Image 1 (tube, rainbow, N blue to C red):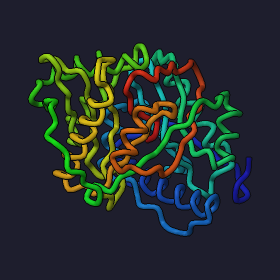
Image 2 (cartoon, rainbow, N blue to C red; image 1 turned 60 degrees about the vertical axis):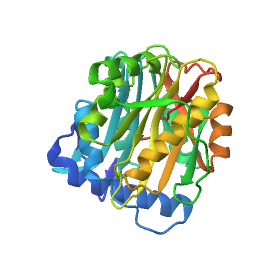
Image 3 (cartoon, rainbow, N blue to C red; image 1 turned 30 degrees about the vertical axis):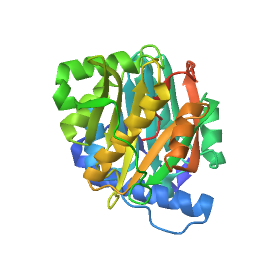
Length: 324
């Protein structure tokens, strides 16, 4: 394909730290163009923070890739591996070089990488309104799965007077690294066999992206949550619950409510004023607790699968998404 009267020479390679500024600019231009073109919202999307890109790069150095043309970065993609589950996001190409097959090259490279890492479930999440993207992923072999909800709460605008929680909590540091990671590995395999959030938690703690908190029962972790309190984009004051899993035990909804409130407390102490939560549709226990706690539905994503099937058990209290 020719663009601007000449054939593109695009090379896909591993990303390194020297690419960060170019990657941030590619993302800003790509997302600003998307919002203008698809949603008629003419504003400049903030850049992804340097901390966010460096965090992803250290966590999965072989799975972060760029498309390079004439010595400059024109596209990028980030892969994420959670044990048996592998996904990618975001994938970005500068507007002037879209529709030239660069996105397809990046995505195919990501699929190959995730398959080589023995991921039995591979996929992504995208905005269902972007029909062009849904069609692209379908062409590359993905099939639509379920939607995920995005819910949001203004942390300082909705404070309920509640009795002190009867549950006890311990942080990652209080539990100790090895015990904490073992608990994360055990709990994260409950929703999806073989899924493992422990690497994400380890690097989150290393990069100080937030806190991992454990709900204790009988002296053992019965649930955990990873709450992000760092800025994923420049100027952001948001926090997000990255993961939350609770063992299938009695009073699971009460434990879920208590663990979410503990995440909110951590976010407030870190100076965050808004909490984002993404989770699979159909998990009505999660939805009810969030709605009762003042969260509002802000959007949906469509999960698409390239390989494998994601089991769903509405009895397991689980918050997570494949959004980068």
